[in-house]
Length: 328
View 1: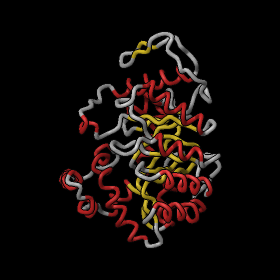
View 2: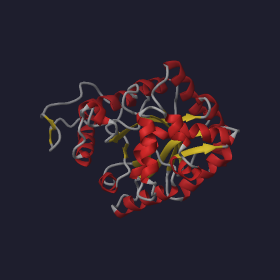
View 3: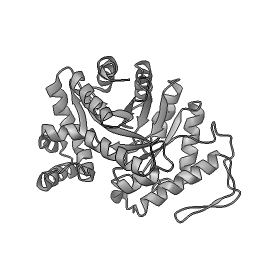
View 4: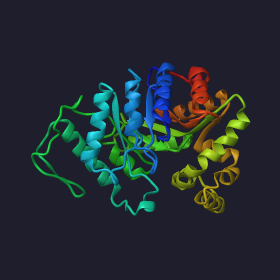
């Protein structure tokens, strides 16, 4: 699409190189603006599919949504985004978020605002050729430390993933975009837009991305979406300040998810709740949901995995039937 409203595709990193190549080519062919790859714990590192996508595209922006500054040192973050920017000839963006599920590997997540902000500062110094070092409260880089190769650009756009007001206000000072991952809720887009504006981040874009399942059989698509969204809803439902989810219902969903009973968890998700945390149904239904998110203040919508009954069929319908219905 063209204009101020951008549309992207988000991929889970659980595929083969050939599949990534096919889906990246398809995404660009249909005119999507961005291809993101998730950085969820225990899936493939997103740099692998992104480098494949860089070789099979020429136009779309590419990035991880998001890398984690608790599991990757800023020097490694800088190296990954620099590699992607070189491979894509200057089309990379840097996504950062505190992440979730890290308690499963014993990683604490103390002081996330400062850790994300310091990571951005270090990455920007390294990409910009500044070898004066860095002395922060979370990270230290000795003077004289520099990249031993020339990056494609001295800086890349930064996206911060968050549901929180404090992180959003902090990101307003340095991020090009703030993404609410796992949301299709127009009220959340409006709230995030207000938080950024209050912090002076009028030029910082709001991105909403969520599980997407589109099919000509809308009821089937929504049934699949319930199962697909369950693991994410168990985490993010309590983070949305605009929604009150029955604590007992949420507890039952979490119990099923913990036992990997996603079908049972999904069966508990009603239509109203589903529409807040997933884009699903017929192409017309999905387009109406995305349009409402744009109207609420989002600058980009990201249609996330699995896209349809198969990734290929979903991206086909999103490109052929949904994109033409969205405002430019």
